[in-house]
Amino acid sequence: MTEKSNLFQIRKDIETCIGQKIQLKANKGRKKAFIKEGILENTYPSIFVVKFENDYEATRRVSYSYTDILTKAVEIVVCKDNRKIHVS
Image (tube, rainbow, N blue to C red; front, side, top):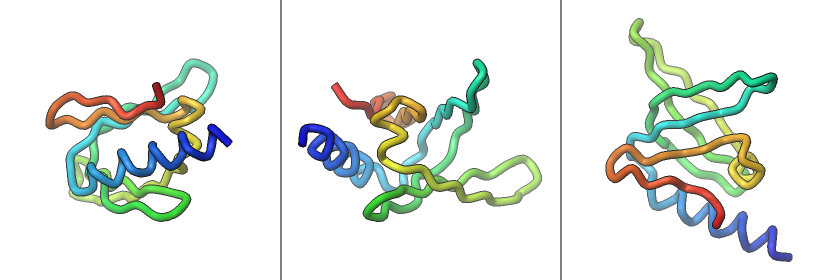
């Protein structure tokens, strides 16, 4: 039951950051990590969407689940105030 409340808190924290610039770090396995800056575009009941832009003016949207943050596979830092979204 505590896991469900943690997921709800993560979702609430992410919803407050919609439209803000974030730094996302995703573990890709075998000591590989994906670190990129993007904009938190939208949230849905099970996932959230991040929009990344590259040097070639191409836009890419990637979705992650809230459980990715709970399991620490994904970390989000809001660039505005260097606030890290995670479970205490």
